[in-house]
Length: 137
Length: 137
Length: 137
Length: 137
Image 1 (cartoon, one colour):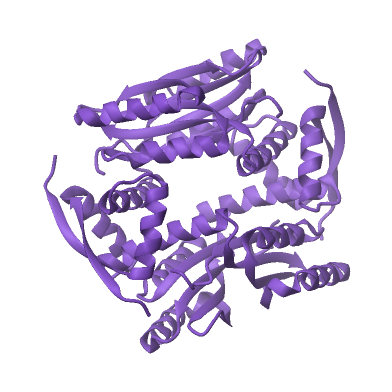
Image 2: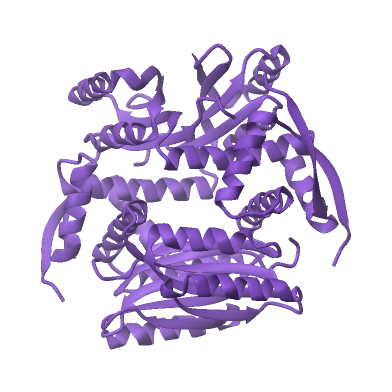
C-alpha cells in the first residue's frame, strides 16, 4: 500500500454544512472517505472514456423458456471468453432470469460484449456497470 | 405470454438510414427488437424513479486485506437480507476483489443498500445497475 | 459571503497523483476548487431528486418551417410562464433552430415542462440541464 | 424534407400498454413521434461519443460580485470564439447569475470549453447539454 498525503481543503461553511448532511445520509463516517469516493468516481469515468483496462458487470433480464436464447447467450460469452470472469444466474420468477456477468478488459470490448448480448432477441433489458480493476485507485 | 400487436411507424428516410446503421453496429437483426429495447429502457427508468419493485446489481471494488471491511460488508448485507438474492465474488488480483450482489426490491431500498455499502471505508468504488424484474416488460 | 473552514483530507499518494493529473487536464489550478466542484455536483443531484427549487436550461432542436410548431411551443411556454426566465434562439441553418430556455422552479415542474416541449411533433431533440439557483452552494 | 417510410413494429400487448401509458404521461399524441424521439436520442449519444459536429448548451452558475471571474469567463469564451454562437445571462438573485452559452462544433472541443469554464474559481456549477445540429436527424 502506498503512503498517505494529507492536504487542506477550504470550504465555505454553508457548503460544508450541506456536504456533511449529504454524506451523513449516505452513511459516511468521515469527510476524507467521502471525498476519496467522489475523486475515484471521476477517475473511473475517465478510464472508461479512454479505453483503459476496466472491470464491470453486465446484467441481462430474459425469459429462459426460449431455448435458443440461452444457447445464443452462451455462444456470445464464449466468443468473448478472455474477458469474462464468471457469471451469476438468478431465477427471478417462473420465466424471468437475471444473469450477471463479471468482466475485465478494455472498456471498448466490454461495451461491445454488452451491446451484443443486449441485441439478442428475447433479452428484455441489459445494463453495463462501469467500475475499475482497483489497481490504480 | 401475451399477444403481439403490430402497428406502423413512419420515419423520415434519412433518420431511418441512420437508425439502421446504428442498430447494425449494435448487432440487432431487426428493427422491432431494437425499438422494443429503447422502449423497455425508458420504462425501466420510470420504474426506478417511481420506487417500483425492481431488480439490480451492486458492484463493489475493495481490498480484502482489511479484515474488518469484509465483516462490515457482510453485516450490512445481512441487514438488508430480504432484498439480496445472491452475491458473486471475483479475485481481480492479489488485493482487489470485485463483489457483485444481485438485489430485488423497492428501488429506494436498493439505492440505500448501495449507498451504505459504498460508504464503508476501504470500498474503492461501487455502482448500482438499475434493471427490472422482467415481469411487466 | 459566509466564512471558510479548512480541514484536512488524506489521500493515498497513488490516488492523489491521479487526481492531480485529472484536474490538470480539466484546467483546475488548485485541489480545493476541484473538490468543491465534485461536492457541489453531488449536492445538486440530490436537490433535483428531492424536488427542491432548482434552475436549469431546456434545449430544443426543431425545424421552424412548421408554423404550427412555433405557435405550440410558444403556447406551452406561456402555460408554464411563472417558471420561464428567458429564452435564446439560434438559427443553426436554413431550417434548424436551437432554442434554449432558462427555467427556475421545482425540479418536478421543470421536468414536466421539458417533457411537454419535447413531445411536440417537429421537435427533433430536447434536453434538460439540471443546475442550481446558486443560493445554497 | 426527405420522404417518409412506414414500417411495422410488433410489440407484446403488455409492453405496448405500458409504452402507451408512458408516452401519454409525457404528452405525446402518437407512437411514431415517441419512437422517433427515442431513436434520435440514441443517435445523438453516438454523435457525441464519436466526436461529430454537434450543438449544445453550457450552463454556468456563478457569483458575479467577483469581478475577475466575469473577465476570465469572457476571455475563455473569446478563445473558443469560433464555436460560441451566443450567450444568455440571467440574474437569479442579488449575487447569483445563470449564464447559458449556445455552442456548435466538435463534441470534443465543446467538452473542453465546458471543462475550462467550470474550472474557473467562483463558478459554482456547470453543465453541458448534448444536443444536435438537427441536420441529420
